[in-house]
Image (cartoon, rainbow, N blue to C red; front, side, top):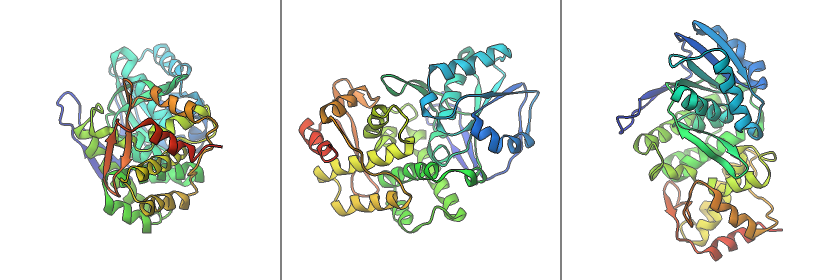
Amino acid sequence: MKVDISFEAKSSSNYSVFIDSDKSLIFSGKVAIVTNPKVAGLHLKSLLEKLTSDELYIITIPDGEFYKNQESLDLILENLFNHKFNRGSTLIAFGGGVIGDMTGFAASLYQRGIDFVQIPTTLLSQVDASVGGKTGINNKFGKNLIGAFRQPQAVYIETEYLKTLPSREFGAGVAEIVKMAVTFDKDFFEWLENADLRSIEDLQLAIKKSVETKAWVVAQDEKEKGLRAVLNYGHTFAHVVENLTNYKRYLHGEAVSIGICMANDLAVRLDLLSTSQSQRVKDILVRYDLPTTFEITDVEAFYDHFSLDKKADDSKIKFILAKGLGDHQMRDDIDKEIVLSTLKEYSV
């Protein structure tokens, strides 16, 4: 299967997402695979068997969102300098969303930009993070606040890699699939209600549909000036949850699951979503063992964290909300007290 991404802006290069294509990968010039010890131990050998390049290097960085930082970025860049990479060289992101984001960011910085390829190995990165060119790192102020838009040359998705994925990681990817269905495609959402994503046939279809949805959005709004912001449904709350737990308690998709539930509770208060519709979304998340609640110890402090998020515009906080199932609404005019009343439902 193949999904093509064609940008309306001529300044961006079009590329394709290959799903279970089992293509041989042939590169000229120097190539560096950026990965982590876990992925390397499980899958690096199989990747190397189908990869050809003039010179090949392996860059290994620590595993986990906690290491998505300047220190890891410097490690990648130092390797490129030490091995004298040039503008004809290529980086390969081989791992989950953390690896993809940092590799893409490094590619955007090194000598003002070199090519990179995404080979995502987690469900979350396959359906979301590897497509669309968002790259970056976290810092003490929040998630992905330092970064760049840098499109890959291609994305190669192999569901074979998911066979070794822990159940929590699998569920984290499901949250991103649900996100796109709820905000853009009612038929897809209703299909998800009856599908079993643990079966390879349903999983392949869900990946393809998710990639097609994101490709359609990104092609129209690469730099997130409007429509693409809808893909942040659940993330306004999720990023606060991640920041407050120092990126250690939850996987990104788990935090998104919590954020979706919080956003839906807010949408119910605003009469954009019915209680039964909100419950239908939660039912899918629970089916894949995703968390749907979070204990807020300080509601005001939680609210204040919204202002650090990328989706905050000056003093206005932008919320992406479900409008029924299959549609969305972006709001930056919601009264603080309404938001606080939603957060209080999660307070301890």
